[in-house]
Image (cartoon, rainbow, N blue to C red; front, side, top):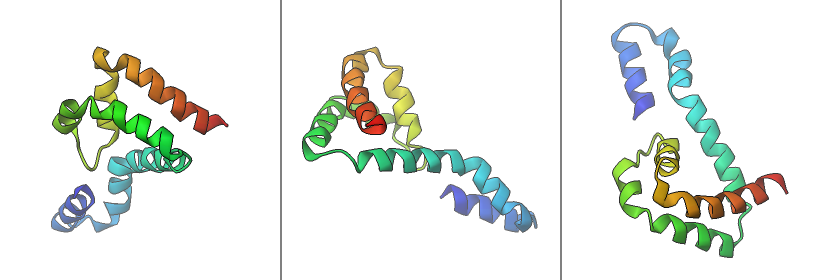
Length: 102
């Protein structure tokens, strides 16, 4: 929706030439983060995925409250700010970094 909104504004303001620059400014870093997470995620085995989702399921209320389809990193930030998630976060990061660097 953000890209469509940016395009609509560019058309309305007769600034179509700015569209590429504006959508990248708004969305590119989130897309890059998503692609990196997808790359690491694809390396997890079923047991690791089950463990991660079990840990995240305990934070269901928070995730549902802050979830944003176009801004996934917002969920990560909110989880990091939540002290009740710290022990789970350590376990998830251990799995994540093991796949990232090995």
